[in-house]
Amino acid sequence: MPRTEEQLNEIREEKRLLIMETALALFAKHGFHHVSISQIASSAGISKGLMYNYFSGKKDLLEKIISDSFKHFTENFDPNHDGVLEKHELLQFIDNAFDMIHDNFDFWKLFYTMLLRPSVFEIVIQKYEEMLEPLYKMLMTYFEKSGYEKPHREAVFFAAVMDGLAINYIIDPGHFPLEDIKEKVKSLYR
Image (cartoon, rainbow, N blue to C red; front, top):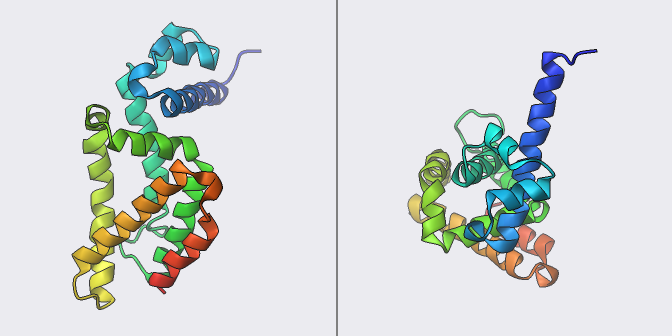
């Protein structure tokens, strides 16, 4: 019996996700420049030609990995999508961010490694900035409405703290007290 269009779409999406997950693991372990399309295809158990049915190349694949992961990340920032950040949403975001760092270790390892390699980060910087710009605006507005004297400084501080904590966790997850640190960060914004 032939497959329905819905079944075919499910199969396509499963393959696309398999390729992305395989590439993510390889990029995180070996670095973007040290992984080939052939290695990704082989590790995913598919042909190299099939890879090109889903992605035009390695850069396109990296862009999709970053885009999909940050879409999930940014959706947690303003869960009701009203463009206004409230205190309970900021605290929930902190919870979610720590969970995402723990649950998506390979992505964050790749991401922070990319930040230190401009030749790789330049591939995704435009998309990254487009996705983060509205978050920064909401964050600055939140801090302004909350009475912070310098809302821009507080937004930059918040981002730097979150990035720094994530980097420290990525470097040494076995010795980083993730839950304790999460509570410390939340206490700054209660």
